[in-house]
Image (cartoon, rainbow, N blue to C red; front, side, top):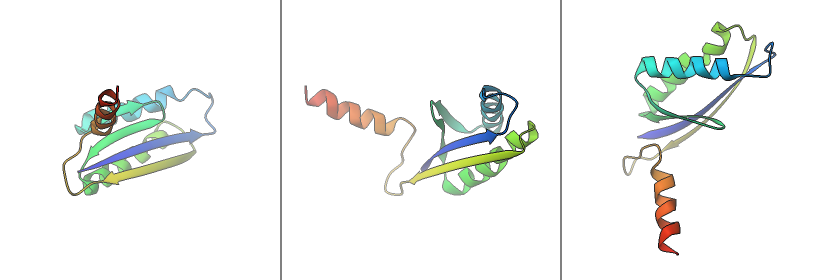
Length: 102
């Protein structure tokens, strides 16, 4: 299972506000049935690596469909093959360590 962080940045839009673009991407993820979580710097998506690449390819087009003429896309993938990981597992692991040190 892998976790992918995706940040899609439309450039040259009429407004510096990108919320409508992000909302469209979130709607597409929901329609695809993807397991995801929005964060302040992007979107986390979990799944098998091959499926994540398909999702990214689809989402990549969203800002262009919405009228953007240039887009910067950042992708980070953490693919762990020794155990199944889910969004939030790392945060829980660190929190447990922090609380055990008090």
